[in-house]
Image (cartoon, rainbow, N blue to C red; front, side, top):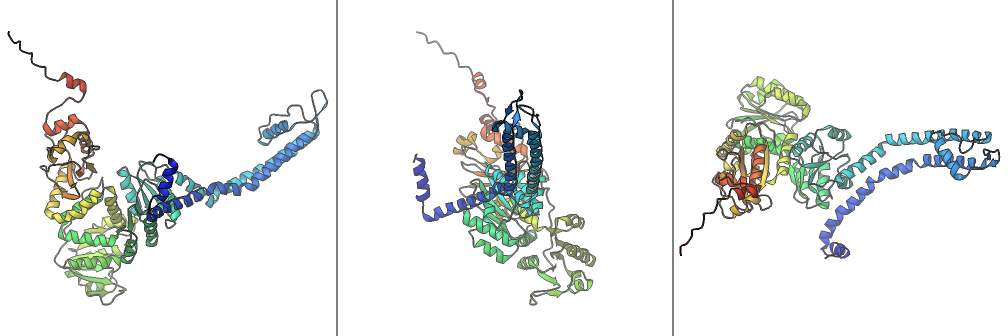
Length: 607
């Protein structure tokens, strides 16, 4: 349909009502946001209206007076100044340039009028400049200006980006992880101080940020919710109602965009999941799941936390908490309930210590403050094997850990850290397990956003068993060291791997042959294939004999040099030929012609 007008009407009326409603909603929100972003212009016109009128009146009266007051020319004859000459004289006089009396020397009457005009213009300029300075310092004007500048930055984004609502500790960790992957993101936060801190952070690319309420759909539209390049929305604010508002707006305005939200409440999680199918991250629930995993499979938990931490993360130590014995949990809030339920699901006996229990029917409950020695004695801490300090106060948790170790030095101790400023104190305690809710949230959101293959690998990896996970960890450490350097995805398609297209169709490419060093094929690449997805089916940890096929998707971890080498193998025919067969092929047409074997001379047939 080549006619643009027909195309417009087809797009507007050629779809069903539901699709038209979905398309119109972001357009309406974007139109409202554009009107808000233009408020700076109208605010300037409204605030500067009176000063500009005063300046114009002073200038007009001064010009008119010069035209009416008679002067004399060079020969002493009466002469009146025209409007253009008067306008010219007042222009350089009012702007303090002062060329002199033009075109003829002024009479005393003209000089008196010019003197009055000078003082009037000074008063007018002082009034206008003072109003302008007051406008610049006005909070609403600066907000309107920031909104306009932010909207312009977002509209100019030409690559996919993530809309991050909430730039607390979790948002900051996620932002640096995304920046490390070369991904763009936009930030919306209610705190102006956090947005100012965003400007001071060292990112590879400019990060647009706006201090505004994320519950307002107009602000979300300004931040790029309706932008065609918006690939995901993440709600990480400290207020769950705000996160719910972001989920609602994204589900109603852009149902095609995936949403990830933070919550610590089961009820709020159900409310969020009523709007489409957002991915909800509950750090307390995740910590309980992680604790169950570390009890059953320490190596699997070690691999999960290493990969979730992203590039640059050090290999964490492999914890081995005791499975046999009783645990004591201090703090029966949201974390305490989740963790107690998960531990009891593993068949572990748990004693709960809580000073103000909401439910007195809880079995094995000790009422009291855990920092008191008598309370821990009533909890029989001396005979326990594990201890959890899970209150929402860092000072209390540190006190609980110190009291518990004094009572029983052999305990496996886990604690909850609520504030980033407390990190040095918790680090010096040398805990066996530490829950930092913001880090749990940031790591899981990163795992979901970095690549769907990583998220799928982390979900399916525990089913392979702890011995298998330990082997993957050893292999990664052997090839790449103890620091995770790079995670990337490779798709074996004609567009991304043109050098392998023909060989993949014949089934002649093994994974072990592909992961060889292009400089010396006897040496392996410093990379490990974690996952291969073929036709929706996942193969975890494929070995070197795994035969690759067209369309396979690979998740790899390794060194950046290995990533660059693999990219050349997938694109350059000569590099691919050497890596797969060991045969060196000239890469240019001239060298291929020169290296061609000479033809044998034809035999002369005798007659």
